[in-house]
Length: 169
Image (tube, rainbow, N blue to C red; front, side):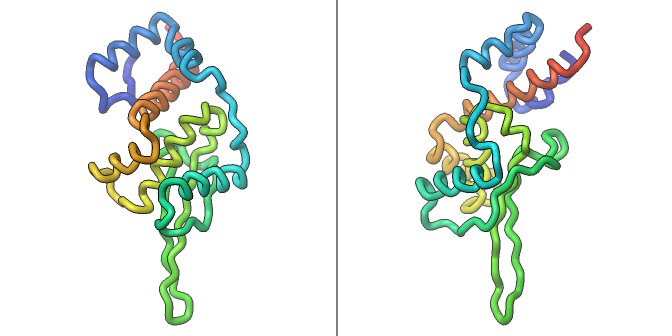
């Protein structure tokens, strides 16, 4: 495999294991055993909004409110991310109003629910921690104990999808 672009931050050993699984046509089997239910019920913007609010209610009760949570078909996995968090500030009268929005790539409708949950948790963590620092990842792990494994698994799914789409030599 020419480049494991989604796994560049991982060790050479992990990249080698993934390359071997791809060559043996086994990565898809490994992922389907780990996630036997690939389809989930969170398929609409309304369902995503309620799903996200429930996670927020469980873990970040006192954080800023969310005004919008939607699937975004324009988010592209390579150029952007699988999710974005934006804070929009507007002046209304004499007050500064702030709105928080989360956008999640539509691709996540087709992936297992734990992977969607990982992206939502990631974006929710940005309500408290703006940067990807130690505190940010500790918050992600607080909200989702196996956050780091799910992040790797999401990268494996993306690698597998890309491998499946490329012409095999």
